Length: 253
Image (tube, rainbow, N blue to C red; front, side, top):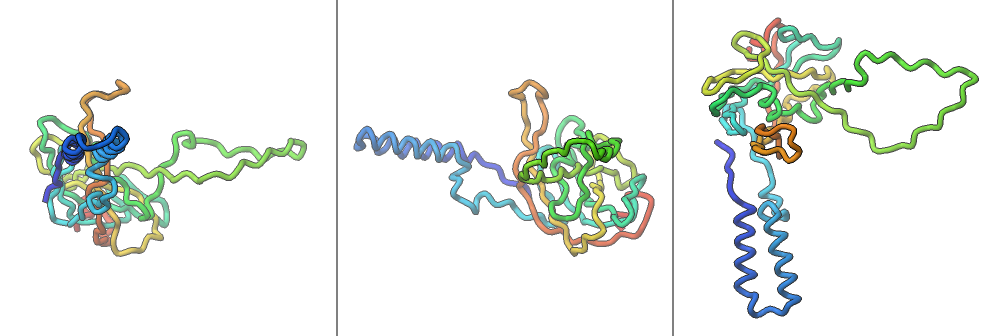
């Protein structure tokens, strides 16, 4: 099953414009303005933002191939392990590996980090957030002296959601972390995150994000790249416990 694409917004705009044109001759000036506004709203909405069913993501089905940007992807399974290759989690945690078959259908190599953007860290699955760069190697703040003026308490605000890391991508065949997916080569990969040992569900919620090609970056920073857009597939993947091992191949056992 591949993700179906269509020209929904363009079709909606053309239909709206034809409707306005068809009845404009019998409208007053005010009615024409209102009708034109309605047609414009339909045109900029993804086939009508009011259609919630249309906006729902397709289900992820393990063993079924889907298309995401330049990749054909088949989710194989999700598993946990005590260690994978050089990765060792903190005491009490384990590693979560989502195993997938992936083929780069384009004509040039693509970064594995681009593929990792298509399958973000599962939400509400105990994935350990990444440490902000400013906190790396930071020493703890010294305790205030008795003579120091008390600091004003910070005003409470909305807590920021912790940022979850991109997966580390391993080639299951040889257990190595690698950088490129070459064109027309089928790989079995493991996308790996550190996961809290407190997570005890029998499934893991997985999402797949559409990758849109950006030819000209309006900010001029990075022309010609894949940009992660909206979620197009989501579902619950059964979670199995893998045997402790020293390489990524344990994730598929």
